[in-house]
Amino acid sequence: MMAPLAERLAIKNDRRIIFLVLDGLGDLPFGSRAQTPLEAARKPNIDALLPQACTGLFDPVEPGITPGSGPGHLGLFGYDPREHEIGRGVLEALGIDFPLTDDDVAGRFNFCTLDARRQITDRRAGRISDDENRRVVAKLNANLRADRPVEVIVRSVSEHRGLVVLRGPNLGGRVTDTDPQATSVAPLTAKGLDSASAGAAECLNHFVAQAERILQDEPKVNGILLRGIDKKPPIPKLSDRFALTPAAIATYPMYRGIARLVGMTIFDPPTDIASTVSAAAAAPAQFDYLFLHVKYTDKAGEDGDYDRKVAVIEEVDGQLPVLMKARPDVMVITGDHSTPAALKSHSWHPVPALLFAPGTVRPDGSKTFGERAAQMGGLGRFPMRHLLPLALAHAQKLAKFGA
Image 1 (cartoon, rainbow, N blue to C red):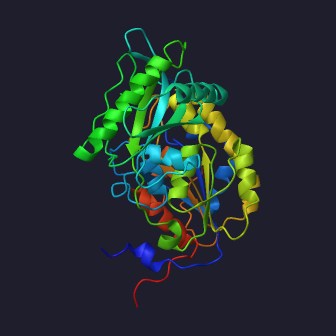
Image 2: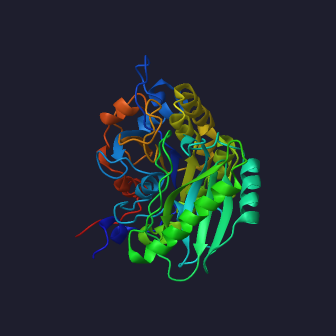
């Protein structure tokens, strides 16, 4: 199959592209508030970019489809998420530098709280601390027993998140989640979607049952919810597709994992928004594509905390002058998906995007950056996978097509 045009036309130059990704940025008006958090936030530095920028809306997968974080980021990086389905367990493993082999089966899990009837009361076990996570993982590893020639490896990730890896012969990775993504119901049973995956599903169900026995005396962390079970897939690198030298600056392992999977150099994880921006400002000139990830907008949306989401956007805006020291020739400010505070979850709504490109952009006259302004913006509305080629074009990294 012929490669997409942007791949065939990609050329190398020293112009730098920055993608500033506020996870879950898109939102809705909430209650008595007529504006979205992005519209309500005071963001003078972002809005000051608009005379040399244009805006639009982008669907992470396609209209009406609610994406997970993996598909959302694949779209941002110019991949069609429908062609590259990657389990979140693989991304978590890569994000914590776990030496995942091609034969391993990896699953991300949430620690959760179960009641006496084995129904879920908290899918995140109160968002426990990293230290508490490590204590509980150590307790699991000290007491788990394998019932077949399959090694079960458990690792801490962050807060309520963990990683389980099955290592053994003839294991398939097509296994369903046990997380029902709801409370007041019991966890689901993992099922193999083909004969090769049935054994992996049986091992994972045994792991979950053991974990519940081992953790039964824990007041909050007494259950396991599995998500994104998969094996590592082959995927072409950004450097090969678009002639880029890319780097990623992200705090959370999952996002470092997907960046590593597509061939980015991974900087040391920052601790907050200020250190994320400072790392970008100090990035060596050889990196002509920088991916900056800010998780806190998504966390606020999932918690239904409208005001905190506004505050995070305002904090990012306050750091923008520092980011401009990285001297981007093109900068995109957007999200990987929408996480409306009113819904407390990812949603299907298109994501607003701002493309800043002095000298090459055709400004659309927007006065502020927000969902409704972006709906009228000059970029229009397209699948997210077209956003990176637009950035490449504005950085003059795509050759002319045809004679």
